[in-house]
Amino acid sequence: MRKPEQELADIKSMMERSTRFLSLSGLSGILAGVYALIAAAIAYSLIYYPNLPIGFRTSYINDDQVLPKLLLTASAVLILSLGTAWLLSKKKSQRTASKIWSPASKRFLTALMIPLITGGIFCLALIFRGYLVIVAPATLIFYGLGLLNASNHTLSDIKYLGYCQLGLGILSAFFPGYGLIFWGLGFGVLHIIYGTMMYYKYDR
Amino acid sequence: MKGNYDKAFENVVRLRVMSILMVNEEYDFNSFKEILEVTDGNLASHLKNLEKQEYIAVNKSFVGRKPLTNYSATNNGKKAFQDHLEFLENLIKENKT
Image (tube, rainbow over all chains, first blue to last red; front, side, top):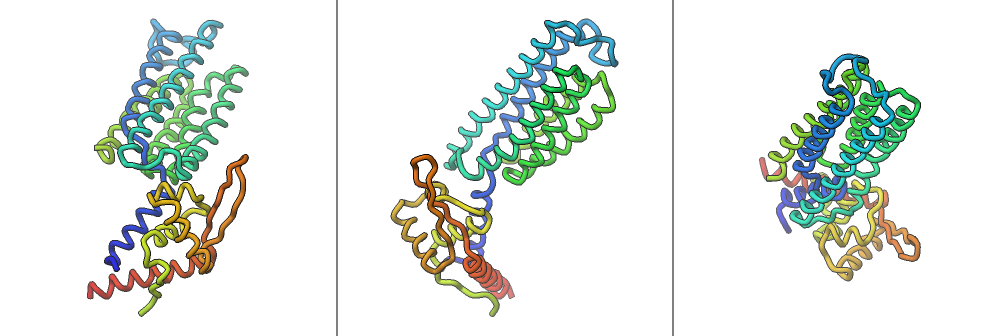
């Protein structure tokens, strides 16, 4: 018989590996943050330039040309980020000899995607009805809720990212006109910080 | 001594199967095979063994045309596993004193 300590360690590791999707890569967080910052810069040049990106209603998104361009930028960032996350997770799971498509990863994706897709459709409705001023807070809040919901099914550190996104989202709801800045902080800066921390903690 | 060393969990594959079923409502055959890295025959015989002792329940179904075999822990199985865990924990405690 093996040592009881070994047996318990084995049991614990099996429980973890079978319930949590552990192949999330820190690098994909950093890259998602970089994409988001680039997108925020593009959005700034579309909406505000040459004004400063602060202040309520000093610049409007009233040009019919601007809105589709913004939506296009946002979709590009979303697709790029998800694609990068998928590729890097695949690579990491190959390195750790685990499958990317497991019951755990399916549960993780479901937990993350339900709030995210709901939020996405809700934000589209807000845009089409012209409530542009609460789109940035809404995306941050739904994203934060999605992360919190998914944190039971992956490395649980992700919940702190979720709390920060929620905090930023609520704060930004009270500061209309600063949406782009909050958005850049949440999806850009926070992702880079979080990704760097995860990279040093788990990936090296 | 408290707890009970269960022969059913002497084998590492059966121990791992039961560990997984303690924290997952259901787990299917192919996913077991991937996470445990064992052959079909080996896994099947251990699952059969646990099923015979009524520690796990089998639920066969179809997804499209593919058969899907799901396993879940029975109350008996959960109790036996808890007792086994308790035994191991007490063993560690005793070794320390």
